[in-house]
Amino acid sequence: MLRQLLVVGNWKMHGSRASVGALLADLVAAVPAVGPDVAICPTFVHLEQALQICDASPLAVGAQDCSHTNAGAYTGEVAAAMLADLGCHWVILGHSERRQYHGESDELVAAKVAAAVTAGLCPIVCVGETQEQREAGEAHSVVRSQLRGALQGQAQLTGLVVAYEPVWAIGTGLTATPQQAQDMHAFIRDCMSELDGVDATASRIVYGGSVKAGNAADLFAGPDIDGALVGGAALVANAFLAIINAAAA
Ligand code: 13P
Image (cartoon, rainbow, N blue to C red; front, side, top):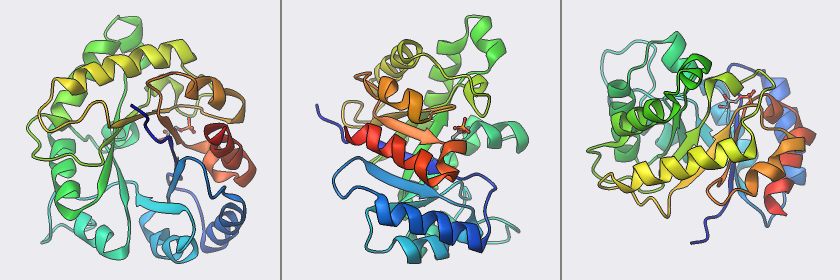
C-alpha cells in the first residue's frame, strides 16, 4: 500500500499579517510541484489570508481546532462548517496543548472529529503519551485509549490522519528515535484496524515532536511513518522546505 506522505505545519499561536505573508510567499515560491502533500495550519485569524496566498499552489490550508457543534450560542468558537466554507481542507484536533491547557477530553475530541467529518474537513487527530506515562510503561495503553476515545463509533472517517506526538518531544528538541516512532506507528495502525469505519491501511499516520531537517529523512524511512506534523520548524521557510524535500526524496 503506497501512502502519499503528508507534511503539515502547525503554526500554533504565532504570526502577524506581515510574517504570514512573507513566510507563505517563500513557501509558495519554492514548494515542489511533485512531492508530498503539504499543508499549513495558521491561527483562525490568518486563515483567509493564507487561503488567498496558497490558492492555485500545492499548499493546502487547515485550522488548528474547531468546535464540537455546528452553530449557536458558543462564544469564541468556530464551527467546522465555517472552516470548510472558507476553503480549509484540514483541521488538527486533540492536540496535546489543547488537552493540557483547555482540558479537552477524548469525548470532546470525538465530538469535534464527528463535526469536522460532517462538514467535509479531513481531521488530523493527535495522540501521544507524556514523559511520565512513557516511563511508567503506559505509552501504548494511553495511545490506544486516546485513539479509541476519539475514533470509535464514528460513522465515516474518509481522509482521516492520525498524528503521533509524544508530549515529551514537543518543542523540547527531543525527538522519538526513528525506531521508537516506527514501533508506535505500527501499533497505532493495528489499533486503527480494530475500529469500524477506519481504513487503517489507507490512513496516514504522521509523526510530530521536534521534527527538523536533520531528522526528517530518518523518520520518513519508517514504513508506517507517513509524514510529519511540524511545529517550530514550520515557521522558518527553509527549515520547513527542507522537511518537505526530505519527504519528496
Ligand atoms: P515542535 O515541532 O515545535 O516540537 O511541535 C510539534 C507539534 O506540536 C506539532 O503539532
